[in-house]
Length: 451
Ligand code: UDP
Image (cartoon, rainbow, N blue to C red):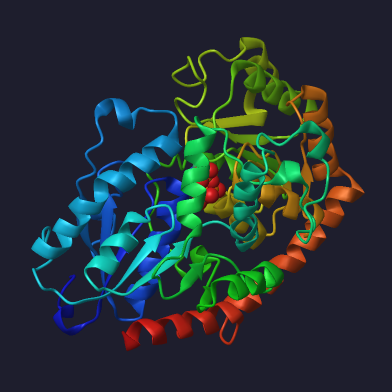
């Protein structure tokens, strides 16, 4: 399979070790493979992808030196910092010595790395290999992140209550409360990662999993700031639809359940691969869903409710009340779910992949951002593209019930459905022949071929 490609140009792609980062990088790899590049995925041991699902790529495992204890650390930012420190020398060694079916001296024309694993750029620079960075967050989030660093030097972090509702100058529609602060562990660690991922260093270009028509203004600002080519080639899942990327096992049993539901009747609920819920939030979500009387498909990841394996702590009364009207799974085939005609709404944490997938499927959203870039995405969804309703503040069953009714049954929801449908159409045009994403993809391939 791989490596009849001896004469092909080899790209080494380094994904970030979380679902929302692995997915777009593997999709990009699939697309570049189809453009005749040889592909090596260089990944950390932590959250390593399933190599057997990608026989066309070679895989290079970078020893990351994380202890059992570090792997279990809920402060993911601390994990990211540690990985970047640990992997720099081991990645350099992997590339110079050659392991895992990559021959020493195998000509690598470029290293494409996720902004989160910035150690890759240091190695590329050292070995004089050109590098290109992939941002798996929106252009809007990328452009506002440095504001957090300014606020820190002005002594405004944590952001004072009096500033929360104030618009961020020049960054309509964001308020200071929408800025992408993390709620993991140490704030100083987080700001360190922001500073490090914001710095382009020697990279030749930036790839974004976004679409020109959706983020024209932030993309233009980024171009001014960085002065290197920027390639908005998204949504990558539309250009690489068959790529198998899940770290968790998908439960496809929800599809026959969806088949039994009527058109646009189901609200799909998922808070992505990282967010956690406490028992109160779980209970308020559950009773909001139950009281709405609408059918729902709910993803609850094992371990996402501290103190519970899965949903054993859930109210029996709730289970009795919803019976077959609700389907709860550990992990869903999300893109298939969103494309299913029974799904009429997505109650989402607004991770960037979920945001793009929902728009591509023409599904309006209830936005419940938890932290980081989700807050920026939610604000854009609700106040710029106007295809979602925002759930603000603490989750409360009455608010949830009203939001579901509004989205699924009322004129306001219908108008959002129409707008997201129009946006979906624009995405179709952008990813079709002659569309902007295809144009930028050709430009990217031209650049990589020239190296
Ligand atoms: N996802 C999935 N099944 C699920 C929940 C999520 O396949 O049950 C996928 C979803 O399609 C998306 C990714 O996981 O591609 C989540 O990425 P996102 O950027 O939305 O959020 P994150 O998990 O990084 O917070």
